[in-house]
Image 1 (tube, rainbow, N blue to C red):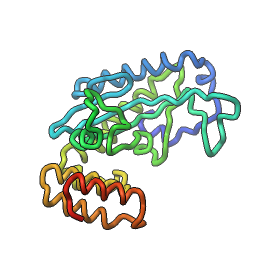
Image 2: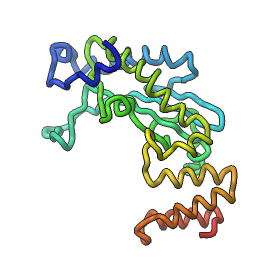
Image 3: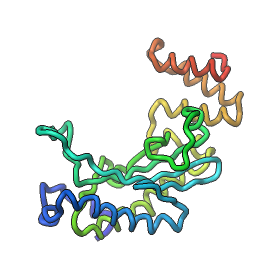
Length: 235
């Protein structure tokens, strides 16, 4: 039984193992999983802050791994199948890469020692990389199998994902291409990363991005236009 088991596993309503775990046990069980994962991440340079792990590379690039637990369902009718699922008792493994110079430019008043997954400009989830869909692990009273799946997934799939974003040059070349998310905003982030080191080249990329924004009167285009004034880039 190994990494590929999660492709075969069906999400059944409640197994005997799941029934034996009470809500008050969820935090304790996730603490155990977190501790075992960190034991593998610490020797390769990750530092821990809560359920988030950071590894700082050269050029101000921070790799982020985070364990996010599902929220407690508040009120009757919280769960709406197909729209809002009850994820309490489950957790997901978030991945992120933060370019510190870009973060500080966009949030100049912030001075962080550790970065959260939501601070990152590039994000994904381990379960998504493994299965092709959003995948949440279910907390049980015997989590050795789950922990080993996640550790194996991090050491293979996640580290491979990180390796394509470990320098500014790789981020500029790879971000926006599979397996990385290709949102339109990626081009603006890349233009800014280039602009920090090469004003002329970065300005050209910035202008190309600005002129590609549709519709012409969108609020985002207005934001980029104001940003150009701040950076003294002539559009």
